[in-house]
Amino acid sequence: ETGVTQSPTHLIKTRGQQVTLRCSSQSGHNTVSWYQQALGQGPQFIFQYYREEENGRGNFPPRFSGLQFPNYSSELNVNALELDDSALYLCASSSHKQGMNTEAFFGQGTRLTVV
Amino acid sequence: AQSVAQPEDQVNVAEGNPLTVKCTYSVSGNPYLFWYVQYPNRGLQFLLKYITGDNLVKGSYGFEAEFNKSQTSFHLKKPSALVSDSALYFCAVKRGSYIPTFGRGTSLIVHP
Image 1: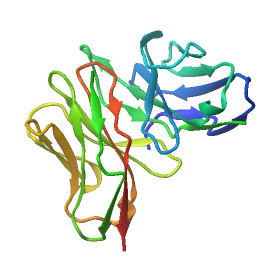
Image 2: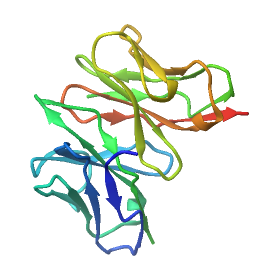
Image 3: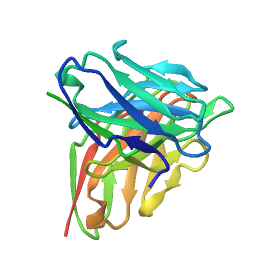
């Protein structure tokens, strides 16, 4: 098991609602990335946070937003939920050193179902 | 732009036989390549990576992968498959500090 923990593990929300997912990064890691994994697909990059700033963003609308805290933990917020937002949301932590990221270590994910 | 192709949705192999899960990539410059494994309802677990050096990379659980620059491939291999190796396998590529791009995944089924 990695040291990356996500909460909650499962969540059911209604279309139009807002959701917050949480991630604690592995000790010594300063970078957190969020991915969306739809059923039968590979992880799709949402965004990455480094030193509390967004450090890259994938092709996701602004209603997907995030935060990174001084202890490097992170939140993913999704507003105005849509049915297609139903997916496994993965948090990955890594260490940004000398302009390079080490390999990412993933949490167990949060399974979000939008009804 | 960078991309990864995993041409097989599913690979079936008998326990004890060698296994190969294929991955090809496209990236400008020198690639960083990774393999991850995912068990049902779990996150991805890191298996191995290629950054530079020896083309044959050894990783966790007896897996290894061979980097082939001319064929832009990074196939995952194991000499003797176990039933417990049955899972979803993802190949990923990135360049330097860029964000990794993941393939769609290959389901490995090892039959007893």
